[in-house]
Amino acid sequence: MSTEFFGDIKAITYEGPDSDNPLAFHHYDPERVLLGKRMEDHLRFSVAWWHSFAWEGTDPFGGPTFQRPWHPQDTLQNARLKADIAFQMFDILGQPFFCWHDADIRPEGADFAESYRNFQAIIDHIQGLMSSRKARLLWGTANMFSHRRWMAGAATNPDPDVFAYAMATVKTCMDATHRLHGQNYVLWGGREGYETLLNTDMAQELDHMGRFLSMVVDYKHKIGFQGTILLEPKPQEPTKHQYDFDAATCFGFLQKYGLEGEVKLNLEQGHAFLAGHSFEHEIATAAALGVLGSIDMNRNDTQSGWDTDQFPNAVPEVALAYYHILRAGGFTTGGTNFDAKLRRQSLDPEDLIAAHVGAMDVCARALKAAVAMIEDATLQEALEARYQGWQSAEAQALLAGNLEDSFARVMAGEIAPQPRSGRQERLENLVNRFV
Ligand SMILES: [Mn+2]
Image 1 (spheres, rainbow, N blue to C red):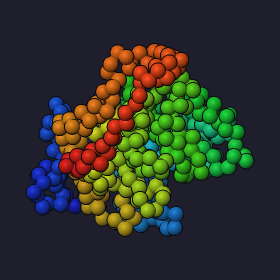
Image 2 (spheres, rainbow, N blue to C red):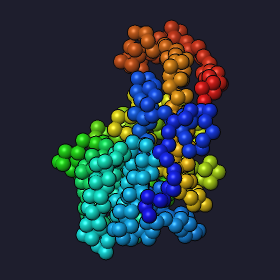
Image 3 (cartoon, rainbow, N blue to C red):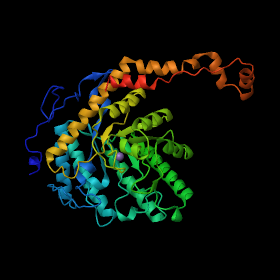
Image 4 (spheres, protein in one colour):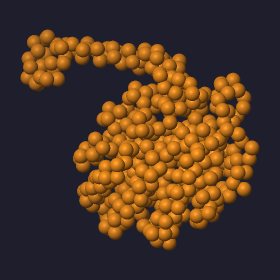
């Protein structure tokens, strides 16, 4: 039964831009070398278990639309079937990575101990699948937002019993990520925030969240996990306000609790958008602060104002994202995770394949454009020209100086600024040649 889910869809191969085969890569050529690195190693694609296999097509107004062979998802037998079919999709797509929350891969037990036994059983099963297959674990994470116990948060919950339950949960997920040789471990503060300040002690909650993250870092070192710990910023939804608002806010939080050298960020295009930023703004901010880790490449609908988690399909905006990633030196342990779900009318197994093939092609086309922009170098030269004045020893001395010395020189007429064009339209026209 399980082998029939994707019908006769064969492994997707690169056929080039002129192919009219909808189930072929037109731009993603994993072996093609760009800037000295294989395209697969630049992009490091990852499939998200939750949207692709755990989400059943529900929305706030309606129940499940999908009917999958692994439904209902409350037995270990179906969890194993779900994993088998997930790996069939990984074989078809050939992407190097996947990601999960504990709740995506195992059935919920009657209590913690049963959930833990279920989790261990399914991690054993996934480890078995991985032993003969290509796909590796990009990151694992804990779902500490769906079950009712998390309704007031996990590390920021006013109830210490929930804080302790969160500690126990993250331990199990870090252990499993370590066992599967995950490249990162992610914390998304699903409900780490507030619904109303009327019942919230923000200072205490932030201190608890800082202490929790410190314990996560301590445990990473204790077990010898070599991956990167990542925080995922998001400004709101499901809570009215989330503490991990955006990249800059997360950095301030990490710095306050002394964790800026230990934790990096997993940035999501849709979350950037919710925060009122472009994706490249979040990437450039994280790069400037030294905390760029990984990305979730899924967009929002520009008109709906909520987190729609759609597959990427706009090459120009994705190209600017990769341009800034390349300028920052590219990914190390991070990658491009599709934290994206089908539309709930997209019922067919082939829709799942087509969504990922299209997304991988959009990213590959965007990467090629970003590489071309870097190889052309005109953008970089324009940037350097704009800051050229700082090359002189006299300008550098300003940074080591004081306000009074500059006052004296400006007063004497030695220094008189001459405004120069920012050339924005010419630079935008230049980008348009590549995307
Ligand atoms: Mn995400």
